Image 1 (cartoon, rainbow, N blue to C red):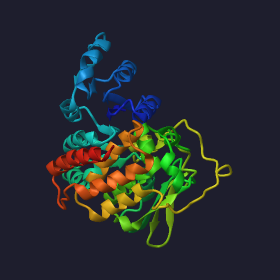
Image 2: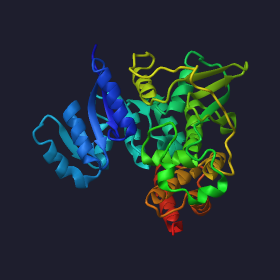
Image 3: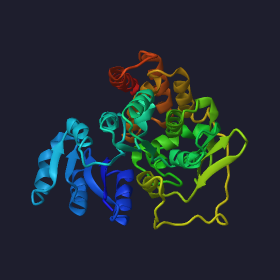
Image 4: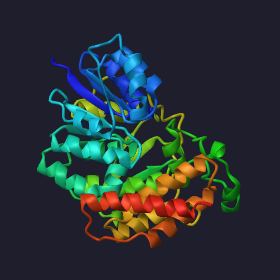
Length: 384
């Protein structure tokens, strides 16, 4: 069997490192063609030494010389740097699939280049569909580039739809853990710290997505993603708070039946399924024991979690509004992690930014880029 060549955008993050575990477990099927990172040059160099890819890319050009020196004794590994290099490497002929695990709007451009090159996209970058879902779907159709979701929730929906062909979806049931503040009274949220927010009850994720989970903006983004991935309007997507994170999401069909995908919280499973679809491969992981796990479901509190409500409002308005929300969220998320912004202030600043930035009902790619820059500038002005 000829090995599938994989490019990992964001190999040093949580998704990227777990993807490498999957590749290592199935070394007879998969091989790393390229690894990329933004700033973690030491981790990237260590990964390159272990997996021996054809190329590595460090997005921050300031680390280029350092990375070259660290890999100087491995001349077969080509070293590149910068945003343009990311766009170009995903187009490389030998690559079969691209795992887009970069965090933030920066993942959009290389994803578009990979789609235009007809690569299989294993999508783990939320911001790609959140900020410019209509454009991405149009490009994927035009260039015959399959998009397989990697998020556990969207993978669960995708798995529930396999074999259903044209059967009509009545409702998507999108589950959420509720984050670390699910049971905390609203008045306490004003004083929570980043250390509190980073203690996620069920998932081990990077800092940015963990904060988004605490505000439930992450779930709002997933609603937007689901709308584009599965062609279902937002009013037919229901968010269910499910603290155990066992039911990863479900689909309700027009005959009233519900199909769900269940499993222990382990991101390697949806990563591996995206790589191997339509096959299922063995995975050395904990098995689900339903005798040990109760299954509970609650409605989300949209007053308490303003960010989730703002995401639904962005979907309702459409156009470039989700792009505005995404950009503002990236700014306030970083500010909260840097202790420059309170927990409740994040939602307030995003709402103010939505009102200030110019709305465009029919955005182009250039509009998305301009919107992202303007929304970041405006949100930064609101941070004291």
